[in-house]
Amino acid sequence: MTTDTDARALADLAGPVEDPIPDQRAATLQMLSRVLDAAPVVLWAVDAEGNYTMSEGRGLELLGFRPGETVGLNALEMYREQPEIAGALVRALSGEESRAVLTAAPGVHFDSVYVPLRGREGEVNGALSLAIDASDRVRTERDLRDKVELIERQSATIRALATPIIQVWDEVLCLPVIGTVDSARTADMMQALLEAIVREQARYAIVDLTGVEVVDTSTADHLIQLFRAASVLGVEGILCGIRPAVAQTVVALGLELGSVRTMRSLRDALKWCIRAGRGEQP
Image (cartoon, rainbow, N blue to C red; front, side, top):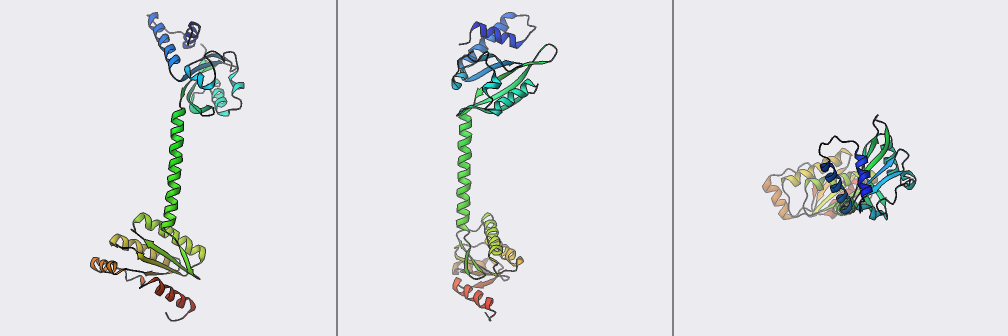
């Protein structure tokens, strides 16, 4: 509980106020005392040397203290092992205001505001801090970050599984495509294929569409871009595994695949690459 002595200390910290109605000021201080008794907050003040002159608020329970218990102790000494808190206090004693979410104890976090206290001539003669318990918020934010990181790792794994690059022969890579091909997936496929081409020093790249059941204009454009990117690195691309239904769709839509070498199956494409690599007539 906040005592009458504590209330007087709060009044002293508030400084001289030109108030024609003293009862209003007393009522304000009484309301502040009730807030400190009920809410998970800490209001404390130190002198110019860092010695506590006031320490109030229900939030002290989270730190294992009672109201007023730390008065007379030196805050800089108490938190010398916690540079964030000590640093914020030093800045306040140097005349700088600051706000930060600080860890006061394991699992205990406070959203704290530090302000310098000044004398009549403007000199800093202490510091005041209001700290609000933010432990639940910090835990929620940490859990959310952990979940986001997990989702990102899972997404990266899924993308890697969706764009497997297989070296099927010397200087020959194969990219089997399964499912729908959109712009985002094409970007992943292109990056994975180009990196594999450079890493394996490949000369031929086979894209197998056996697992693709639907092809539209957008899909065809994405595939053409993929082959163009590979050709820039001096790699010849071969498209194989086109299903009859996909072939009919390509013709019906008038899609242009003339610049891409096509083969009936992965086996035929691999045979062609092996013969071309040996310098034989494919």
